[in-house]
Length: 416
Image (cartoon, rainbow, N blue to C red; front, side, top):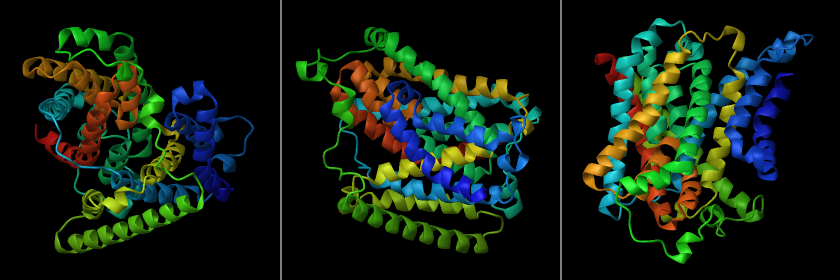
């Protein structure tokens, strides 16, 4: 039975991706949310009357879950970074949008921690991975609210890959991870709905707005931004060749990072393996992205996202609904909502002070709060192709620094 679960965890993302492309309504929900739902169902089949308990929790399943969740994040980090072009932003507005956006997220996280940390820490919500505790891979200690603050910093300056990396580094349990993701998807959806429905027009009146768009820009669609004819056809000979090169380099970087982390852990007292491992791996991934030949392999982000999809369904299956305590979840929901809307409000105010144009601010906020994959969609909603590069560049820098910032914030918050 446990091997059947392994096959499902590895292949279900491919089926869900196909269904999301086939059915538009499912595509609007998105693969990650669908995989979370499927994972939670798989992990809690024992709640269905009449089903044997072994179907829900077969012996040895936790070992498979632990291996997959531990392997997918390290594989995804460099793959997501390989295709990035780290260049100095071309305009003053882009630099200002990047700096004010990061500053706004940090301020909102700190403010939310001061407001909600007592309620969150007083709850009995389990945040520490028992496997991480048993293996001694957690670098130091931190309060529940501080760990959540660090994860929110990572995901709202970077994206899901940063959140997953921080979950591993901080030893946060699967239940808390799934809870944060669920809340994030709901509140982020509301945020996007607000921007598309009335926010774009509202902020174009409140903030500086450039010259009228050209007819070419006005006809811009999501398909224009997401299409890439340079990618090899999926599962073709060239696709497999590129995949083999990318996976080989990724495994090599993982091995080097693990070796450095082991050496550091022997030299410095304390259990720092996972922390050093993730930070070194991120740094090597960024360094590798400067290689033009490696950056030309266009399928790296696709493979990296598939790893995140496998991670998503697996970690969701580890959430035991019967054991989850939602007594502190409303405080977490309030914390997350404050970070999203509080950081956006602060960024708008700073944009007014520094005279950053409205479209750059909106696309930067979309990249931070919803991650770079949503940039083309928002650019299409604004009918402005010129902001795609700005949004992706800002989001990519967020990917690069999100893990560092998140870890630093998780350590600084308990000192407040």
